[in-house]
Length: 142
Image (cartoon, rainbow, N blue to C red):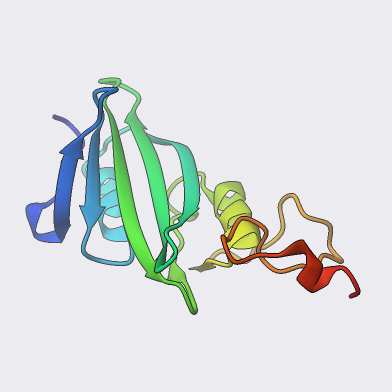
C-alpha cells in the first residue's frame, strides 16, 4: 500500500466491495493525511469529494488515487450538523470546486477556501438543498 493512513488518526476502516479501503478518521479534517502524502512525494489525485447528510452529522467523503500505483482509497470525516466546518485542502491538491459544491449543498465551511459558489445562482437564498431537512416550501416566498 503506497497511500498509508497513520493508525493514530483512524477511527475505523473497512474494505469496500469495489476493492478500495475506506478510512473513517477521528479528526474532523483529513488535511494532515493529505499533507503527509504530498511531503512523502506521492502523486496523489483527488477524484471526488462528496457530502452526505447522516441526519445527526454531515459526512464528507474524499476519494483519492495514487496516479503511479493506481491505488484508490477513501477518507471519511464526520462534522457537527449545526455548524459543519473543516480545513480546506485546496492549497495542497485540486479541491476548490468540490469543496464549493459541498458548501453550497450541505453548508460545510472549508476554512481556507474562499470559493463558496459553484453551481447555485448568486442570489440563491434557499438554504442547503441536499440536506434531509431542506424543504422547498420554506423558501418559496423569499
